[in-house]
Length: 86
Image (cartoon, rainbow, N blue to C red; front, side, top):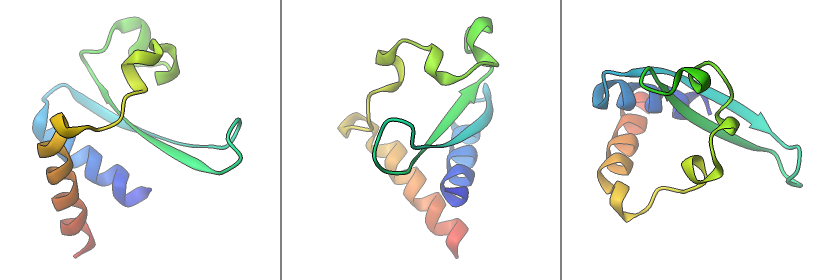
């Protein structure tokens, strides 16, 4: 998770000057397995959300997964993970 968080931080900072930080969460409250979330956060988020948990956004804002339209982001993250592992 640390490696993924660093890769997300590096890629998001390169892609968007409004990048602020990465939130890392390890949860297991409702699912019968431990799982983690990596959330990039941005300065351009609404003032009432930027310093608060991402869960305050409507579910449609964060429930979608990476799809075919995110191919270049997926490739850049993969390359960054490979670079960090080297």
